[in-house]
Length: 184
Image (cartoon, rainbow, N blue to C red; front, side):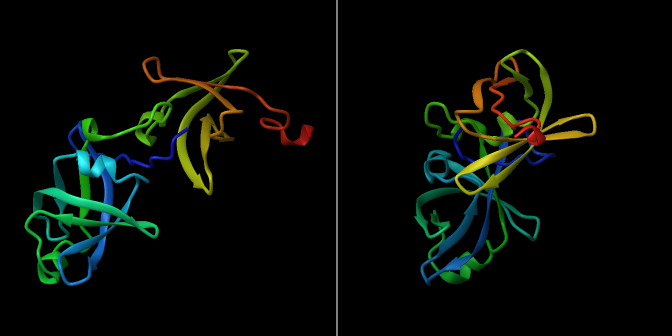
């Protein structure tokens, strides 16, 4: 299903997405340690000028010069940041990118696209709406809500048959024990 974890953030322009957060500077030459909702640096590099919302309330649009994975984060170099003192001002900053800058592989979906999808079984039974996505190791878990009932669905190809973003639908196969664990 793709594991790009781009988050929604209300109060932003429709084309803006909360991409991640600056944790702290890295080294002496202005690199930033960035925690991202994406597992790929391609979207950040493709974004052009990226919005950094500083904790002081200031907004800065800067070009990303480089971004590379480092353990569970990215090390990011921005235009104009050349030392640790300049980089320190970005500690805790939110990073926002344009939706059209997102890079995806075929068959991958972003979280903001999946939230709110109506979920149906292959027998056309309405199960509810995707209300939350929980990261869980190798796959995500979709929380599908209908009234007071929540159903947890693994985001695997065995369960999720088809995603139709245009019509706001997800079709799933009901594997034994998936909807009624007591039946197993």
